[in-house]
Length: 467
Image 1: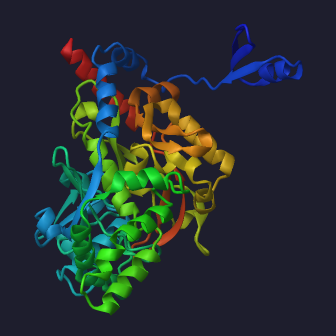
Image 2: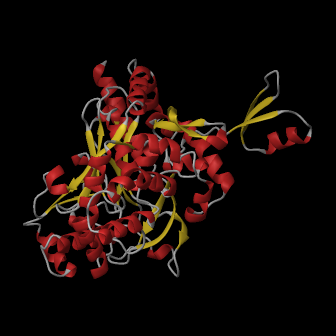
Image 3: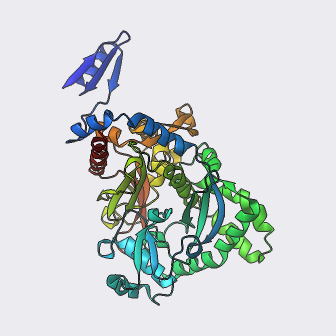
């Protein structure tokens, strides 16, 4: 079925395209509208939320709180010191998870972290440790003001970035980026993986902490503003951001008085790891989104996260409640001989970047990213435009030059997702399904559709309770 409306300057059409094509052939001006029915079963809840007198102002305040946050890098220190993690305590990406439900890469990362902390000599022996659960605990990074890419595992000895909003003192945290390939966050735990992690705790973390403190607070939000205009989208492409960070800390590293060999290794490691800034972009986005938490009546999403088994979201108006569904396998490009059967379902807290309006939402800023995740340059431009249909506004700080400096789509609105059926676009790395394999590719993925009606229902219920 096709519906039409004839304004003074042409015809607006929605539905199947045959009628619009016929008008085009007759040189009649046509504006095609991609109208879709709302998600099934959401009609009543959409009406309830749409008529909530708090919603418009609550969403405005949520977006304002997010976009006015200035994230500053202020320190690098061990998780034991920052988060109070003790021996046997582990954090992970995504919503809450039990060992028996953990995917291969999540198990591999936890096994490697257990060996790193000296709980076992061989990562393979950690399976029995986690199965018993007697001396270990698992909690989401998000429950500790932290985020972790891919498996997102944090253990006490790992060093973490500290980001702060200096107007109110709020802080967020993230581990240091290991690079790509066979790394812990992708579930690998070979001897070279653990050796690299020990070097990061013994050399990299302390030198970065010393350099950050000597340099003074580093404006992460400002770097994000610049890198989005330099070909990065701050999820799977962070090359410009990494080099700007290295530029800022280089003088302090050179003057640190540390062993010249150690300084050279730090320069080489950071400079050779294009993803290094990702682990700053993520907590910068979380810091901004956390400013919007707890705003009654707001339908804005403040977290999207995956643990390799489930995909979960949280909203500004429903507190810390998770709405979850099965994580999806990304579609994209595979490394070597790997294929779809080798890939684990989506995993990681890095979708916090898309939640904040960058990453997959800002693919138009980074057309080169399509070579890494698949798709085409027109796809990237269309994605950024399409994401604007499910967001509350635009971020004036983060703009997209090729789209006439349009602000990045900001504030995913649960009600708009349910009304249009358009799901948030995420670009992501893919971990191997089997523990120990590491990265097998990168691609594009969306959340499971059912989690948005679930969140909408909870928001509608709160609205009804206030009436």
